[in-house]
Length: 523
Image (cartoon, rainbow, N blue to C red; front, top):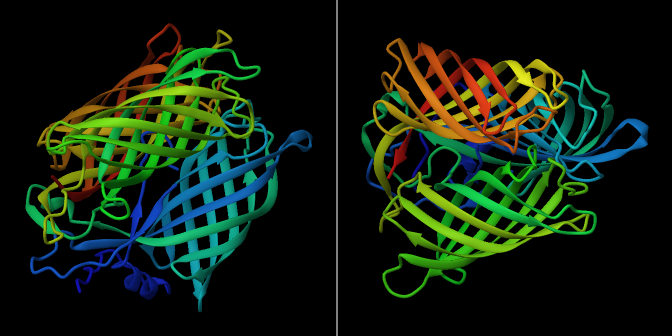
């Protein structure tokens, strides 16, 4: 049986031994952030023996934590709030990672907040005391969030129940510049995983491993979706969304074919619904049609949260059911079309759905021996603060605003990379303003030397918070300079400009960010 190599980062917390015994059996299917990071799935599998040295000599323990609670708003109004965090073990009982929250009950569907969670954990037998602090930015659905900054300290208990942990916590949700402030109980569900990777310095080398790298994403899917909104009290219109889907897949039983599941997020880019956003868990199945296997047909269902932009989703829970067909273009690229139906749980909102998508394989497919063989490429996770100096508002005024965000980037060659990003306002009176972007970047060298410079050109969707972002479509260009603090850590400063496609937002943008690099196998 294959044994995972230990991570080079220290990890002396009391839960370390439990993680070591689980990492060989459990995998985590994740998101990432093109917009807010927000639900992850665990996958059980046994690792076959392998003769080759593994490609991934490093493994960081992870904990995925989901929680639900009921927050009190002014006037006695209550709102369901659901959150998910992907936490990394940084040693000595400390955990750190991205987290996102969204409205999941009441009448504030469309409220989303993205940010960072820091936790300290103490293990006692089969349970853990968990103390945490979340900080992030966002808003929506006309909730009184002020500038959008949300703080959430919490203290709770997690108890082992088979492969997961269940628990309860006391949390305090605060929007310091708004009118939301309350203390309540939260229900917790957590499960363990691992972030398997190679050192960033190994980028360019070939390798093989039975494990998926990172958070277990097999492919990235760009989506272009159209809704024809209908329902009582709904202004009938067609809106267009752009987004991304992160998928993990498994071949075979039951039913044969391929099972796919993951996380999908999108934002409105046309149709007068700027600010509408959705985050959905998704699962589907497809199988070859005819000989050759290039053409496939199947079905996919999605359930999650959506709202904002004047789209009446009630508490925010929405569901989709789609049928589709796809074409495999080559070993890395596939494209497809889907059609189906959208329904809101709390209102009469419904809509026919049409979607076109383009998928890019991130992980090598396993061979007959179960090995994934490929070339190690540099992948970066970046935490960023951005400052808009002149953000036009719908009331005709112009004010500065600040956002917090997460970027994911992957090198295509020595000088070109692809990136997806999500940002949300936390200051400037623009709570609920959010941005999802995707695009290409160029850089003087793939590795810090110790200084390097680069530039990005991005397109995507933005809206909310009273910002005049037109129909939602936005473009942003940023040039940056980076200083290497280590081979895998870089501090960056940048400057550029963001502009909506229609008249409205047109502002200089300044950025401060820090990135962490890994090497992962690519097909």
